[in-house]
Length: 239
Image 1 (cartoon, rainbow, N blue to C red):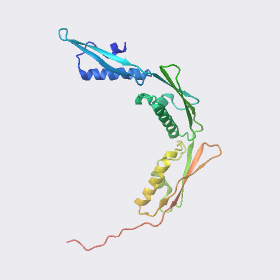
Image 2: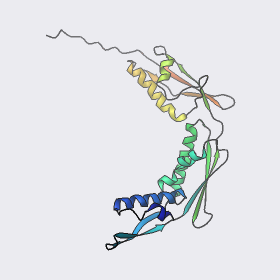
Image 3: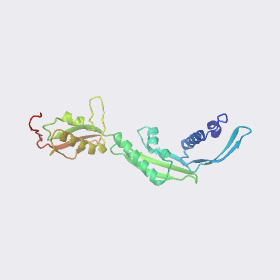
Image 4: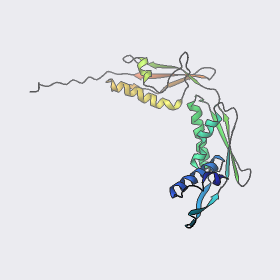
């Protein structure tokens, strides 16, 4: 039925159209869990008198992949499936599955779940099926309560915050802690000092503190500004 729906017998034959149709068929199989399905042309039989061509395709489905998320996922399961992405990689080997687990962790951390814990189980219910279960414990969603600086005298805190990826929560908006951003934040702070002539300025690693409930974190960046350099240009007038 899939072949009848996707390859019309009323269209003029073109090899480029056939390739596109095969790709459409492949997507159907992938959507059904056959992520490693293989489709190829077995035979093309041209009938010049009738002005038609008979196409024979061979389909090798391979194993069917199913993915389950166990636990209180909190985030959209559809988005979790997209993040796993095994269908896009056309793979279900152990290495690909472990990489998908790491993508899930990064996805949760990006959304503020700093204490995310994920365990993976790979099952084979039948010889033709693979079941991957991700056991998810998201933990508390961690809000970024406050960003502070220590030692900044020449550049105000508001200006320093404006160059950072990390942003603190405000009255009507919640922002979440992402540890991955801290390295880039530190580099951005270092760069703004250099752009202002503070070539000896030093920005230390962020000191991260957490409240007693574990749902809020604060950042403190220690800064040693040093003295700004000034460049003086002198010379005679040009004729």
